[in-house]
Length: 157
Length: 251
Image (cartoon, rainbow over all chains, first blue to last red; front, side):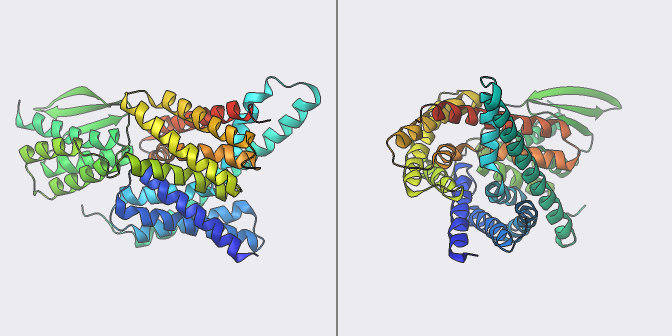
C-alpha cells in the first residue's frame, strides 16, 4: 500500500469538495469541513481498498465515516452539514463509470455486429458499477445515520 | 388583510426562500412549521412540489386551499442559512410579524458570499482536482483549470441573462469539454477520459442530488425528492452529451 499516493489522492478529493462547496455558495466557515469530508472519505476508501476490501464495501464504510465527520465538524447547522456531506461523498461516486454509461448509451444506436456486442458488455459492466457504488453510498449513509442517532441532539417540542 | 393571513404569508415567504435557494423540502417545511409555531398558528397543512406549494388553512371551522408558485431554484445557501436562523428566532418568540416580514425582504436581497472571480477560481480548482483523483495527469490538470474557469465565467453570464438551468448546463458542458478536447488534440495530456470528465467536474449537480435523497429519505416528501433526483440525472445526461460531443473531436 503506497501511503503517499493515497494521501495525495485524498488531498485532491478534499480540494474538490472544498472548492465545490464555494461554487455551491456554502458559508465560508463550512469550506474547511467540506475539505475534511472529502479528504477523510476518500482516504478511508483508499486505505480499505489497500487492505484488500472490495471497492464497494470500502465505499459503504467511507460514506458512514463522512456522515460522522460532517455531523461532528459542522455543529448545529444541519443545512451546512448536508453540504459538507454532499461535497464529501461525491468523490466516492463512480463518476467515470457513470459518464461512460451515458456516453456508451448515446453511441449504442450507431453500432452494429461485434462492436455492438462489445459495447453492450461494457455498458452493462459500467451500469452495474454505477448502481453498486450508488447503493454502497446510500447504505453507508443509512448506517452512519443509524449509528449516530443516539448522539444527535433532540429538538425541543 | 387579517392577522392570521399575514402570519401565513410571512411563514410561506421564509419557507420559499429556503426552497428557491437550494434548500431541501424537509428544511423548507420545518422552517414553515417553526415560523407558524412562533406565531401560535397551528392550522395550516401543506403539500410540497418543486414548482408550487399548496396550503390548506382552517379558519372559523372552514377549510380553504391556496397555492403559491415556487420560482426555479437558484443556489444561494447564505439565504437558506439566514432563513433557517430567522425561523428559529421566530419559533422562540423573539420576532414579531412586521419585523419578520422586513427580515425576509433583507434576506431575499443577500448576495452570495463569493464574488465572480472567487467562484471562477473555485470552479477551476474543482475541475482540476476532479481530474486528478479520477486518474488524470498534470497536463490534464492544467487543461481542466482553464476549462473550469472559462466554463464558470460563461455559466455566470448565462445565468445573469436568466437562461434556464438545462441549456446553461449543456452550453457550458460543450464549451468546457471542447476546450479540453482542444488541449488533448494538442497532446498537452495523454489521459483522455479523466481530462474530459474533469473539464465538467465543476457542474456536478450535487445539490439537487443530495436534496432529492434527503427528501426521499424523509419518506414524507417522496414526490419533490424524486423530481429533484430526476433533475440531477437529467443534468448528468447533459454533461455526458457535452463530453460525448468533445470526445468525437479527439483523434
